[in-house]
Each structure stands twice: as structure tokens, then as C-alpha cells.
Length: 295
Ligand code: GDP
Image 1 (cartoon, rainbow, N blue to C red):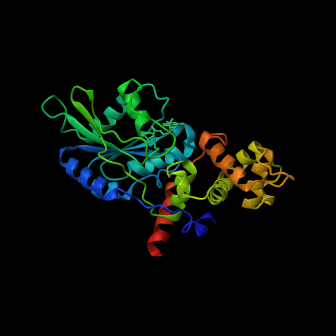
Image 2 (cartoon, helix red, strand yellow):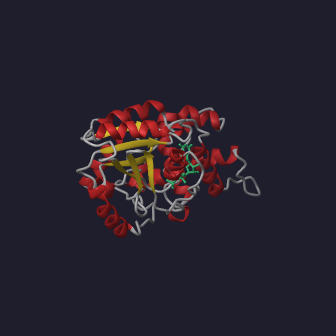
Image 3 (cartoon, helix red, strand yellow):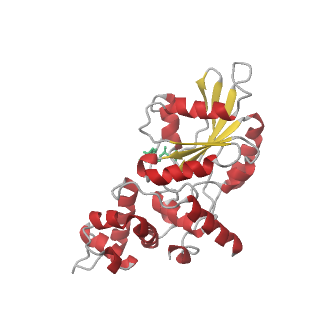
């Protein structure tokens, strides 16, 4: 399966992690609750294990962001799974949400009932790996377009302190919270979704892993998108060739340009052209983690 080829897939090293760890640890004593933004399409793989370790004792709000791109039924599964964890609230959001501040503030207040009011304002820190949509959300919380956003990870670096209400302060993460891989599947999912910079992986390998992951749950979507009669008859490579042929990724002589085909498959997934897709369930991610720990 996709997992077997995953371990050698991503040439990725979490740089700057030590300085971020230190900066977060220094900030934590004055923080009441920690918000972790996750990608709703890959809530397990987009979580940061360092953050979990640093904030073990803190109340937490997990936000499944980009829910507009994720499978609604699996988002519900993940929300239930996260809410079952100690001191944890969870909600799903996307950039189209009209009033994200109200939802975020209400969920945080419920986590820290002892705080609030001018004397003891609620102080929360918002964290998330690059490209999860943090700047977009902060902009929308601000109600204007000011922080920079971009498609490639690593663009947002400014530190901010925002008063979302007279007694509610939101701190941005001090430093960059790079993804850290705990399971091989996580690297594939992060690469496919844009959570890892392009030069850290091979497009063809990532596209093949993505197709292998998506086809069992969403075969009908792929068949419709690429006009395939019998998806089951194709290998992952055959499926990727079909993507290339359908999308005009051909070399002179009619051979499929697999690099182009891979870029197109990844683009189609990211842009939502396959419909709303989630790459992992809580059970699957738990099994992968158990396997990785046993190895
Ligand atoms: P950051 O690196 O976490 O600050 O991420 P950005 O806010 O720069 O967002 C990364 C990319 O995801 C940008 O192309 C955004 O337009 C896009 N994005 C952010 N939030 C959402 C969302 O809720 N839904 C969708 N579909 N795209 C989003």
C-alpha cells in the first residue's frame, strides 16, 4: 500500500524547531489555552507532536480548518474523536465563515471558566504548521486584509498579539511550527495537501501515494473527474497515466508526461476538483501510529 513506500519519500528536516520550542515554552506560562489549527483533510498528519508535548497540561482548542475541502462525515468523526480527549474542545472552520471570532472565543471561554473580565483576560496562543490557513484566519479575525498569505509554506513570520474582545487576547505562535512526521503516511498527506514545500518531495511519488489513498474511499469521484469506466482495472500508475491523458499532459508521440500528470493530480486534489476529501480517519491514523511505534 501507500505506506510501504512512504519512509523514503520525503526528504524533510524540521529546521528552526529548537528556537520555536524555546519561544513557545517561554510564552506558555502566560497562556491559558492553546489553539491548534489542523487541516481538516489530514487532522492527524497536520498535528504537531512537539506542540502536544509542550502543551500537555494546557486546555486546548483544536480547529479543523479548511473544512470546505474536507469530507463532512469524516470531519464529524474527527470532531468527536478530538472532543473525547482531556481538556479539549474542537470545531470546524473555513475561510468562508462569517463570524469566526465568535465561535473561537466561545469555545476558548468554555475551556477556561475561571478566566475572563478585565482583571483576568483570557489569553490564548494560536499555533499551526505552515499553510494550514493561520494567516487567513487571523486576517478574518481582524476583519481586514493585513497579514500576508500565500500558497507556499513558510511565508508567514510576523508575530502578533490581537485583542479579539476587551478581555480576550490572542497571541500568534512565536516562531515557525514546522510539521514533524510521526508516521510515513503523514509525509505523503502533508506533501499532497501543500503542507511541505515543493522541493522536499517527488511529485510522482506523492501523486501515486495520493491516488492509492483516495481510490478506496472515493473511486466514483476519480472515475467521474477523469472519465474512467473501470477504475478497479487500473494500477496506481495506470490511474496517474489516465489523469495525464485526460488533462492533456502528453509528450510528443502521445506518451504521458508522468511529471505533468502528477502535478495535475496534486493540483486537482488541492483545489477541490475531486470534491470534498479527507485522507485519514482517526482509526486509520491510530493504526499507523501504533505500527510506526512498534517498528
Ligand atoms: P498559513 O501558512 O497557515 O498562514 O496559511 P495561509 O493563511 O497563508 O493559507 C494557505 C493557503 O490556504 C492559501 O492559499 C489560502 O488561501 C488557503 N486557505 C486558507 N484557509 C482556507 C480555507 O478555509 N479553505 C480553503 N479552501 N483554503 C484556505
